Image (cartoon, rainbow, N blue to C red; front, side):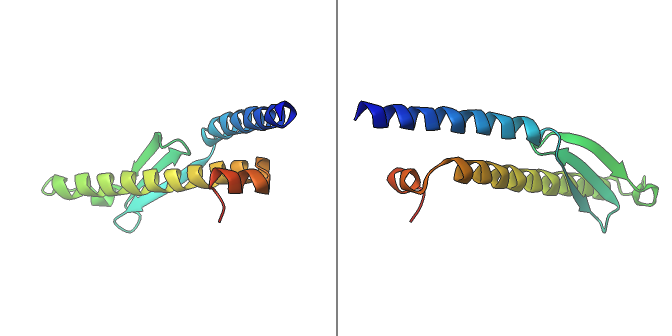
Length: 111
């Protein structure tokens, strides 16, 4: 029994190390969100940090600043949503690669 527990602990440590590595790798991955048909574009990393905001000069209208503000917010939201999806996908890949099928069933992660 103790030997089995040692194996589980080693697997848990491997999983923890792999997930930490994935978190680091997410800093280097980029996703993009846009609004207004590409008039406003936001680039974020895989950890949802906004890296860039690009605004097409045509959308800058001093008479309608509110529209530009709305486009920026929408583009940021889309970029962050995509970053979250990317992070979940990468974490899932890491978890599935390291956890034996039996452990997944035991933990309730697999049907």
